[in-house]
Image (cartoon, rainbow, N blue to C red; front, side, top):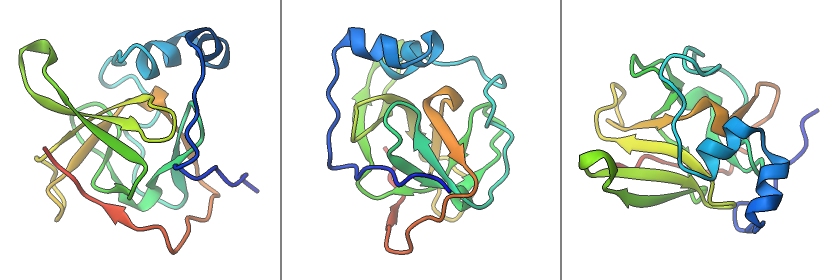
Length: 152
């Protein structure tokens, strides 16, 4: 049985040295240095919607329900909703464009970006790095957890 993740309100603060020790080099590059894994290389980009939940790889906060995942041809895992209160949104003006970066509300880890071009009824596509999340297929998502679809 999966362990219960801590609530997203219980903030986690670590030094960069502690994060380096806790994460793999690839996880550190994406979650702490705001890197991006190469498209079509992450372990979850082709995973279909299903049971369970997706958690932050750094702190295990529950971020997405497995049923809110869809396969996007963008090359990264995609979701049309997030668990309300688990994601922070930031304006990102890097690479000569304006996007909305999404980070874990609990530990501040970089997850990816959110766009208003999703193919589902929400019109939202959370584009998330596989290395930033862990899939727990046997987790029983809380029926009380509300979801949100938030775009730019």
